[in-house]
Image (cartoon, rainbow, N blue to C red; front, side, top):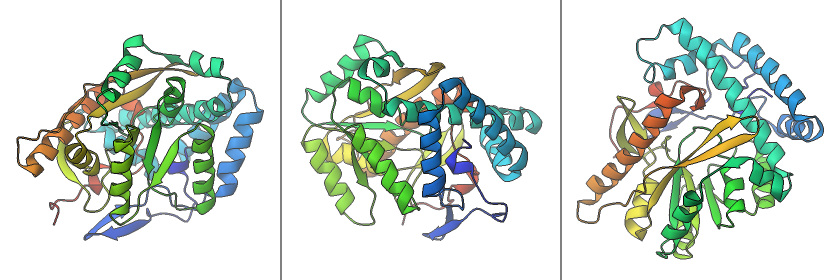
Length: 329
């Protein structure tokens, strides 16, 4: 039950990195225990054991990870420095345990939701009718929606909510380092009726996104991590960061709005959807300026959520240290 991104074998003293454009970027899910066996076992345990017991297992395993994984604990504490400035390191380390436990509960509830009945899935969410209407109103424009969020809250369970709304969803995602884990994750999305586009180093990904938007689908992307040179500078929680550029670029090229959305826990197996203000990429500005403005608008909305719930920001490496100092080539 320890979050997949935090699992590291004892010998993995340094994070595994890949050189991209002169920057050593962390490969967030590649490590010894992020394999098909562990992921498959987690799925089976969650499916076979009562929720209360799975929560208890998650509480213990994340506490154990928090105690033993100094690098992960300190990384989370360092990330929180921007959100709770002035708070002592020891206090932020204690907050790190809250983050690990929140993530474990989110994983458990998402895996349980996959096999739940339609009624049980609906009961998981507290949402106002206007939230569903917002999606339908934007789709009525016929340009699709670019659904953007960060590694915040239970973004995966948002796919269940889209299923409840009967809305067509495509998720753009990095392929898992382990092919067995990647296969299982695709199977989970397929089971929910969610299409997956895997990021590739070619124009193919952008073309696929354009096609889905032209088909008036919702295309979901995590925006608070850049991939190599696919990045745009923003200010997040008062610090410089680089976000993924593609969502804003696709919004400019297609006319589709960017719709921030954040899924937050309200209780055991209960969540609320928090749609933000739609972002329309300006067409009367120079291209790069328009893209940066849209990205900053999303960063501002994410920053508000981070200050309200710091424990829901799920980066298990030193996020601020991963930000390059130079701009795109």
